View 1 (cartoon, rainbow, N blue to C red):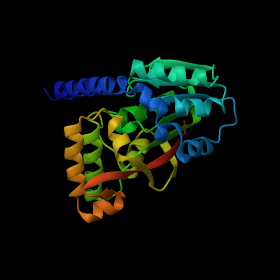
View 2 (view 1 turned 180 degrees about the vertical axis):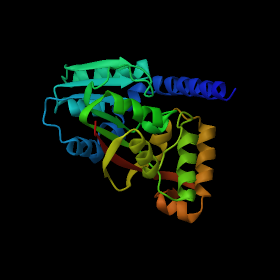
View 3 (view 1 turned 60 degrees about the horizontal axis):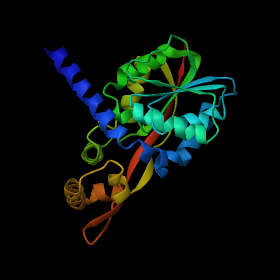
View 4 (view 1 turned 90 degrees about the vertical axis):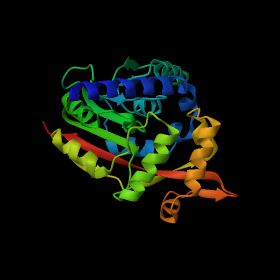
Length: 268
């Protein structure tokens, strides 16, 4: 009975992700947060790839990370669970005159690739949607070649229970397909459990969001947006200060969430 409950929950989550991101695919291609940012350049810098590698970008979204690495390596596979997102990513990278890229659909917890297939696996602003982060990391360990690199760039919460609950609450309220933003300690535990070695954990950094654009990207109904806005206004000052919540006449202008980049290496 317990296993059935878990499986049903995972199926529901997959449907939520496909529905949510299918209707928003084009917005993720044009989203400034996803298309730009020093964190994207930092991922390429941290990977330190000489240039002949094969890279897998899991949950590719609008294809921005895949495109960034395509200029650095010999081959990139863009992988996503949402067909509409893959179509949007394909159109985007072809417009950028990137042709040596392959597209594949599937779940992050079940990578349909042979052992030792990739020199580098990346995922950016996506892992908080994964129903099972631990199986994902184990799958990455399997498909990585010896000395291969994993880069996880995602929303991550501080090691503070109140801030953790606050950020995950407003993220899930805005986007029901959000599962959880984890701490760097949780990610480190899963990574090391998959027999990968963590080589670097970047300090938590902020991403700033215009509140109206941030909620509109998820097609958030006006009534829900107003309720979220009221809730944010009433947060303890500790949370409002930490997440840079800017309020004017009881309206939310902007807020920030936190993220980190973790680098790990296959030791097999």
